[in-house]
Image (cartoon, rainbow, N blue to C red; front, top):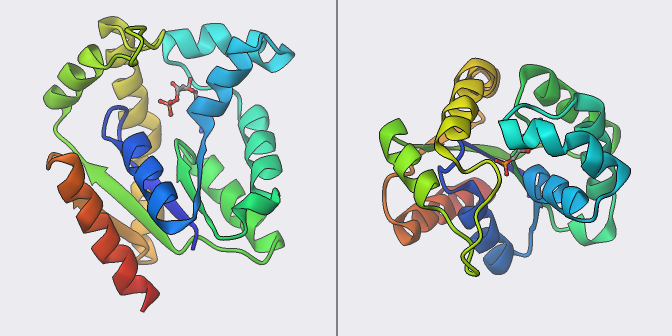
Length: 192
Ligand code: AMP
């Protein structure tokens, strides 16, 4: 089963994707994590995207699309994927559909984690890694820029998925376990 997790930054997509990966054998594909790894390793792509990411701006489509295409084709994605952070624009959503079609695959479900924006700003400002470090883009001004980009560019893709009945809204303000259970119940329902 291939699914997309949608929702603004801080909605809990990464947490839920990791939970699904552990419980259902699907692979999490997080474009943000992949890009951060490139930045950390100081690869040519990493050098190109570092500044854009630090400001909360989008990375150019060709880089993202190539990354996704390569990753989906790997054998460990055979049981399905959880897309986390992609697609983020209408054009990425269209590219994804045609890319999957070429490979005889499709998106089975699109889950939107619905959250309150004020709570998100608080959550993101408090988000820290276990070692106490913080993401370069989890600072107040950048958080607001990322939410703005979400509202302007990503929220408009919701009707694209709503149109063909693929979108499921889940209350992302519940605790992690409750959100996970709601996602599981929905996936069980569409699998049966
Ligand atoms: P995330 O970890 O998903 O919040 O992504 C962190 C940052 O990576 C974003 O603010 C963008 O700069 C970049 N990024 C991740 N996914 C995409 C995407 N699908 N399209 C463009 N930029 C992306």
